[in-house]
Length: 487
Image (cartoon, rainbow, N blue to C red; front, side):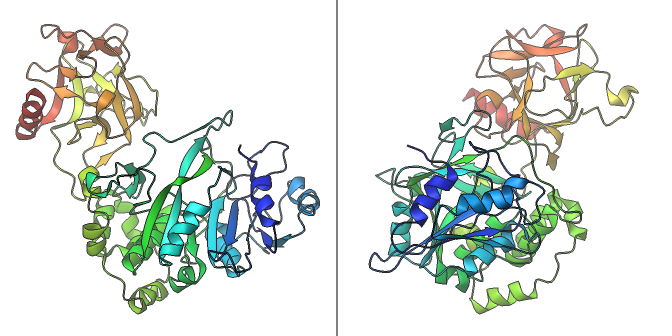
């Protein structure tokens, strides 16, 4: 049985000698509507003890706008919380953001373990003991539950695709999930496994160890980058981090951003601050992909640098070699050269593939090639990269978007879909006869010049509607692709 956020957490809060706090600062996650319409917040923290003989404290900060215009976050919230005798509300005086409000909540805790969760979560059965067990084995451990998916529209509950996977990142600092390598797979798949970075804000940690690490960097603004900061720090400064398959927590992945970010707040600034503090020379790989980051101010990071020195933390090169050694296989710091890139021109129509800056589900179309005099408006997107993953993405080699050409059958449209890096429907081959071959459907990308449609069809190397010319081709790389495909 699953419980709504308030009932599930506060039921635990009010057992025995436990105590809970509600820290109200601001609603980063947009006052998500739960059930009766009162279960709104940002982050819940649970603090408990790993020692059964010790008094156990549970800290459940429930954050919302202290000056909110929403009535249910004022007296209505106070009245609702009054039902829980061991819960009290602590309101910040102004909007502090996720990171500093989490620090405020953690500073009030008195038990041995802190657990941080988002409010738009629901805990599953027996979720907490597996986390505490790992910390009991080594107090310098951060542990994360498996994060299941609660559907944004109908609250359906299911595991993420692939279920247990390692947390990773690409060199634009987007969070990624990669398979557990054979070297780290356990005989029992329910055993905890090491993970380089956490997915976000769902984790448990020994309270003393959290503060020994300096907690979160208070210089990070509102939200963003904090999961990398705490992950790099725990590994590089003598700790370890595990994901725990037996601990399951559902999380709502919203389809929109329901909160306002204060003007002047920048996720990019947070990411650069983390990079400059922890990533050493590897930060350059980020700047190569995000050159606009070079000119951003990180603010004063001298205290963070001093903390790293005091804790005798290892360097990021060690982190990449000892902890995240499998990440470059999926997201190499130096991008391998592509097989082809530039415009993709259809031989029969003399028109170019155009993705119109679309997102998932957008059907590719033919349009007048920009280089042939089409207006250079923002609406056109005619540069593509056939890269080392053997997928095709909008953009130039070092600046591709995170969408890939995708087809589901031998007669389906060709659409953009979120790149997953697992080949399948996004695996393509560019053959000597100029066809774009799709191995999964055993068909080729075709077109209807009159209707400007692009779709899959049975391969016909003599058909010019199936022949495509890339603007630039690296024959050495392309031959390697084709040799691999035929072997």
